[in-house]
Length: 524
Image (cartoon, rainbow, N blue to C red):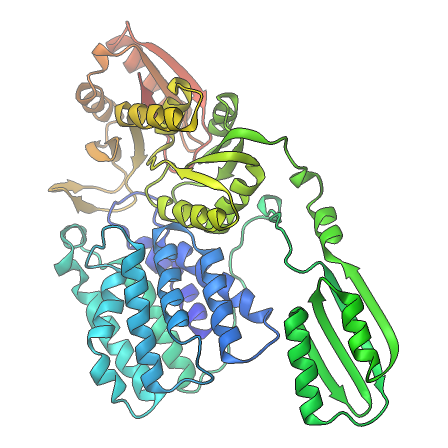
């Protein structure tokens, strides 16, 4: 948890380490979300043995993972935890073996690993495994790990040209360094942990995930023992409870036995403990019924469909357009507000279809969507992740998709995805250099699909270059989604210039409501 605290303390700094000078840096927030969920899982873990703690970290980081950095971080922890899952306690040598597992799992999770990133930090740590294994204490180990991690972070610009050009180090690598630094601080004696004051999603956006519970009944018993309970009997009873369910809390004090277990057979548990004494108190709650009540109308089960669509949307107006086009579930998110793997999995489950097609609509959300799909598939759900990198691709795909069968529909979507022309206009938040271009703070930045196509303080200048590069004069329709930050003057400039310069193009303005990007445009 000290690693999480230290990461949170530097969240804004990591968010600012963005290659593009646009207001969408979110690596710090995504990594923070990942470790905070792990902290929640740890707090809810009743069993203090090492395997339970490692499992809580592994499951918590996965469920909290947001964005590419969060997903990769979750895989680093997964590899570490899986490698050490059979251990009862850790030595320095064990910890170093865990680093190797972390590296191997993280690299496997990324289709095309890139050096100069968070991956490089864990790889370099593994390359120093012999040196680290020779450390005589955890204090020395973490001091050495911190030193190696910081040195690797400083070298990331030399490994990744775009970092060098932007004059920044890699944000994910720096985040992992701060986690390691937090570990070191704790092991050296600073045991205070304060995770208060951390920004969370507003309450109106928080959803409770529908889930199939493994064990239905929360069972609590207080039993007065007939005779003294021996240590061997106590161990047998504890093993019995673990075989019957999970969330086991069990202790014996004098002649009183107290237990808590989530199980599907509360009657059998009661019968077993009646062999040892008389029942003083019984409490059995149907958790399935409670869960469905709490979830309520939010999770009223939809009629089963053959094919359903799930989309990530950056704005309320855009969400309405997607719903009108047939999207079944909307996940609020986009730049600087990446949804977690759990958010996406939640929407997939709610869609209730034989096949669920997911549009991440952002390159930084694709990994989380793919992780959600993998988990959903273990539950018997068939999920197809479309690698859409902007919401305009999603809209075009929904308008022009063809076919009745899933294979035909996906083929049609992919075809239109490649043809989509998306324009995005934002404003630079700092001076920078990108693709050989010197960018000044407060300039308008115009992107054509994923490429920076124009930048200038004059909005008309940016529009002119964007329209020329997409050959707007040869197109028929220009749809413009107006963002929440767009001013009436900016909207007037876009409207007057476009109508005057391209009178034969049909122009439609819609309220998109997206942050950070005053204008998102779709060319047809």
